[in-house]
Length: 233
Image 1 (cartoon, rainbow, N blue to C red):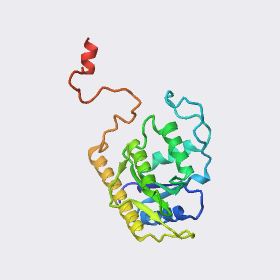
Image 2: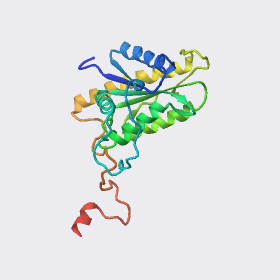
Image 3: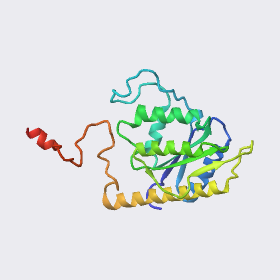
Image 4: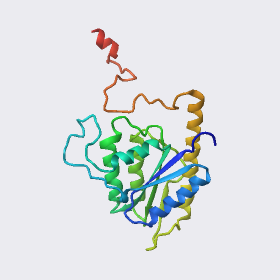
């Protein structure tokens, strides 16, 4: 593998040390290292992350959130990574509250301004007893796509179920899905690197990363005028 090692960042939304989500990310780390890549983990429970405040100016401001906590440092680690895996348990039929707070705060407070995660490879791991894992997975898929990330299809989603009161990785089918996802994520990361090295530019254009900036439509519909026509008039 030429060049610096690809960095895969796992973000854990579980409040429970040593629980199913931690075990899933530890397994993920072993898979990543076996491929010769670097694996890093952020446990959100170890960081001070403020919920979005009632300031109400998120939709008007053009600079990152001013609340003082650990979010800027976490976002910087996300910027440095080549691939990011969101891992969360299902709590109350939704994502654990740490993950929910994190994706809200990261997206609204930091990522929406220039979409720094664009063209990074994304993956999702959901741990649960039995219910709502697919719904939580769908929510995080939308979050990855919102941030212009590349979601690599790998068969079934990595949904790991455990009905035992003891944390353990016992879902054989879920683990197989996790393995396929990780291998394809790393394969895609290496492909993107090779393309950029050969072509000198990203595979996908980065000229439209912020949907908050008004731009001229690429396709002019019947009855509409182009930007140059509007200027001329």
